[in-house]
Structures are given as structure tokens and as C-alpha cells.
Length: 331
Image 1 (cartoon, rainbow, N blue to C red):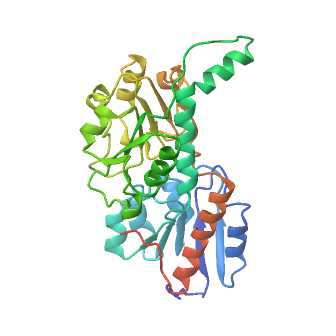
Image 2 (tube, rainbow, N blue to C red; image 1 turned 90 degrees about the vertical axis):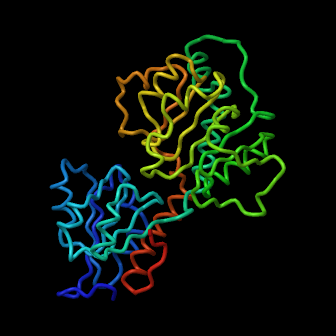
Image 3 (cartoon, rainbow, N blue to C red; image 1 turned 45 degrees about the vertical axis):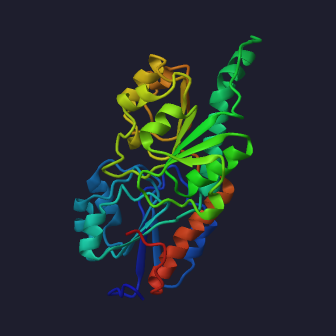
């Protein structure tokens, strides 16, 4: 066993299953059936970092279900040396203090590519909803109106994809299939564009060039010190006034105030967001009241297919750790 325990019991804690996803899953039931493995799960929101520390104290593996759960240096230092493994449900690790995990020898794993298809499809659904104003038209028809007006056709338009990981590439393939031209900006990240993806309608360009030339922009970049707030007032001002903006990646990639002002002033035509800098979003915020924005509750990955794959991958990562077969590690 990767971590020998004094009493022979390996302790796993899920401190943040709110709203519940793991609680009634077959994946967690499988983990609970393992001999000498004790699983504790909390479905109530924790009120403070001290509550979080109390919940995970004594755990050997911590399963982090929400990106809103900030596993800081203080938290990691408070629960080691018992804590040996952090299993992230998802791919992003910016909410984990990786400098502390490296220093203290805590292994961090994630679930890469489990929700690639789900998130790419959600991004396209948001883009289409923006282009065709589906939420607004639906509401007006329900209120007894029969509105006219012109909508936007995506075929022939240029989609700018910022970040060329698995989700960005998947979206590019789908968008190309409906007749869109593709601009990509890899941002010096490790691009997953292969020779198979080198197509006549795909062009890699600099970030500034993408902003100026794309009819729609979909964000799929990682959150790092360099990319935090990469979309601010200057970036929105470089976009076309008809541009549509979609973010299914990370809320902190975008300066929320700058985006709100760009939408309110019609610097850009519209935005559709599944992620926010603070979640849940304040229902009384100006952003939530603007007519040219579509909001979904960080739910892009929540298809039954993606949930099944990702939850099982989390459990597989825990089992692998226990059995000295560590995979899907975060550097």
C-alpha cells in the first residue's frame, strides 16, 4: 500500500460534495466496498478553512469535488503527514497549492479528458444560443409575443479558440463541421493539435490577431499567473462589435467588471458563460441582469456519460494510489 496506516485502515474524505454528485454514485459505492477503506463524505457547504481542515483531518486521500474548494498551503500543512494523496475531480489544479504538495510529497491526480466531449458540446450550444438569441426568443414567445428580427448564421463565420487543449480541439472539429473557419491561439501552452488536425480552415495566430479577426471567441485556456484576467477592457475593445464571447474554462480568466462593461456598452454583441470569478453568481449583479448574456451554473461537464467516466476515474485514481499504481498525476 502506498501509505501504510497505524491501524491498517486507509481513510478517504470527500469534503465538498455540494451539490451532491458523489454521494449516490456507483463509483463511490465501489470505493466503499474495498476492504480496509473508510470513506467519509460531506454534502453540506463548509463555512471556513478551519471547517475544511476539521473535515479532512486524518485523511490519507482527499477527493476534491469542487474547484471552489481552495486547498491552500495552510490547509495542506495542517493535515500532513497523514495526507498522502489529493484526487481532483476534473482537470484544473489551480485551486490546489501545488508548491506545498510537491514540497511535502503529496501526490496529486486528476481526471484528464473525461469531460472533453461534454464541455465542447456545451460551448457550441452556448454559441448557437447566442447567435440565434434562443433564450430571449423563447421568453418572448411564452409571454405571448411573436417577435421578428435578424439572427446570426455561424456557417462562414470565424471562430477563435483560445487554448488548444483537448476541449478546444474538439470544439474546433465540431465548428468546422458546421462551416466555420477556425483561428487558434495556443498561448505557448502545450498544444494538442496534431498532424491529423492540420486542416486548410485552421490557422494558428497570435492572441491579438485572434481578438481582432474572430466573429466568435471560445475560451479554453488553463488558469495560470500569466492567463489570470487575460480578457480585460483592452482585449474586449480589440474585438469586433458583433463578436460573441463564450467561456466554459475558468472564471478568473476574465475580468468580470470589464466584461460587464463591454456588454453593457455593446463593445461586443454578447457573451455566454458557464464559469465565473465567484460562484454562485450574485443574482442582483449587473451581469446577471443584462439582456445580451447567457448564464449556466458551471454545468458544462455534467452529462450522464461524462459523470460516469469522471467519477470512475477519480475512484480508479484512489485505488491505483493505494496499490502503488499512480496515474494521471498533476505536475
